Every structure is written in structure tokens, then in C-alpha cells.
Image (cartoon, rainbow, N blue to C red):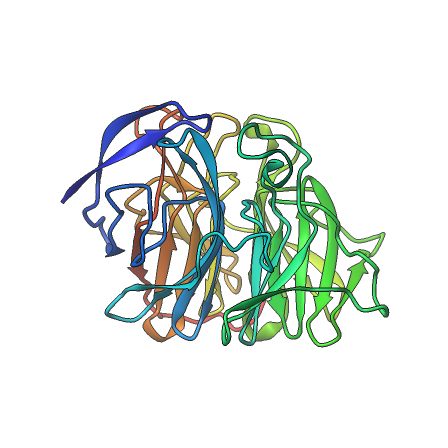
Length: 378
């Protein structure tokens, strides 16, 4: 089946092209790209730079952005949706659009989310100043510093207030950072070209900053990177991203492990072949291995990738999996252990002939991962 979608530039210029919605080798369409950019009661709108977690066999996605050609203005999304990861695949709305700023986080992109129990936590991001000056004109340095908690049981947001026992205000304003849950702590790393590491304790509701050992290496400043939890709650992995500056030299392809109990960073040395340096990709873990999807291998002038890789920490080796049906960045992937499947949603599509051709997505694609071996530790 062929769907006509509108190709958009960030500032509103557009033209039409044809995008195939058929399945790719190894990949299947779990929910087809919609014919318009708008969502409805059955599915969310197109978007990119959202974030996602898995809870009770559902992929939970929230917030994000797209440029609304019809109204000639940016569209900052503040809605939350759940997608069933078991058949039949379908969407359900958790928090309707338009709640932001009224007991819920404003629409934004570049934020991060993490899950603890039945609660989804959201931190940071930016809306380019929309909450201050309206829909027109994106401004830099308009990041959020708020931390919100969404109960997936009663579907209500709560703005978190740090306890007196911890740091009074936490990481501060930032976007394009990472968040990972390890035990009862959520770990926030870097973003906005910073290099700091912060933990939020979900039991005491307090912030604490972790200072790396002065005589040990660590990942350093970055943004547009990704992080994924390690098996058995031992820590997390940080992958790629970029530092200030543009062009291929600014992009990173390194892998770092952080183990909170030891307060120790360790760089993972990988065998070739391996993914090219990139930012705005997506990662998730399955069977103790990390899966990497898409992203851009250039900035500015995005050059999107459709590659899918899986990294085995036990063997320090990347293995390439079937490429995704679209070349995309600022999307999300999640994994579903019961079915050993990767699910990909949303993002920004790069055209096949030029890095200047873009489109926003809301299709869901899935890839079955063989369970051959499980890596239990790093």
C-alpha cells in the first residue's frame, strides 16, 4: 500500500512525495502511518523528539513536536498514548491533548522519560519559548527544568517538589539528555552540552549529584545521546550523541557504562564493524544486549540512517540486524521481552536523495529478535 504524506521543512516549507508503507525485510508494520499529520481518537498525531517507555505490555509515548502546515505554526504535543505490544495492536489515549500548563507539563520536545513502578517521570525539554511568547518564533535557551510524575493507574500528572534532604533544585534547565531507571533511582545524564550526572530518588523525592572520580575517565559533555538500562539493575549504558560544534567530527560513537553502586564509569571497547557516529538515535535493551536504531550521521543537514544493530557486552561486539523500513531520527524504540520484539514509533524522516527532505511519522514498526544468547552482565 502506498500512502501520500507531506514532506516538511522545519520552518514550514513543504512538498509532497510518495512514501511506502509496506513492510521491510524482517520488519513488519504494526500500525500504518496515517494519511494526515493529525491524530484522532484512535491514534496519536505525527511527532518527533517525543519519548517512550514500556508498562504492562504497552508502549507509552508522550509529548513531542511537529510543524503544522495547515495552521502555519509549530505544534507542541502534550498528550500521552499507550500502544498495545501484543496482538491486536491498537492505541488508546491516556492524557488528551491540551492539558499542558494546567496541572500537566507543557508541550515540548527533547525531554526524557523513565518508568518506576506504575509511574512515568518526565524531565526537561524545550518549547522554544512558546509558553511565553506564543506559537511563532523559536528561541534558544528556553529549556524546562521541571520534573513531573504521571500515574499510569489514575492517569494524572503531578509536579514534583524536591525534598529538603537533597539538592534544592536538581539538574536545572536542559534538553536532549538521557534518563534511565536503576532500582529506585532515575539517573539523568548530560544534555545541553553538559557533562553532569544526577539521580532522583523516587522513594525520598530528592535530587543528588554524583561527581566522577577525578582520576578516572568518563563520557564528558554531550547531547542527543541515548542511554539504556543494564540487566539485573546494575547500571546503564550511554551511547553516542554530539558535543558543541557541527560536522561529522562533532559526532560520537562511544559506549560507556555507569554502575551506581561503584560510582564508576567505564568505556566499552568494541570490535569492528560497528555503527557510524550518530546522534538522535534510539536504544533499548533486550536479553542483556543493547539494540540501536536509526539516528543521524551528520549535523547540521541531517543524514538519516535505517540501520539496526545489537551489541553484546559479553563479546564486545556489534551485530547488524535487518534495516528498518524508514530512515529516521528523533524516533523511539522499545522492547517487549515476552515476544522478543522491538517496536519503533514516530520520528523525522529523511528523504532518499537529499538530507533536506523530511517528514514526521506516526507509524509503528516491529522486528522480531532471536533470543539466541542472553548477556547477563557487563
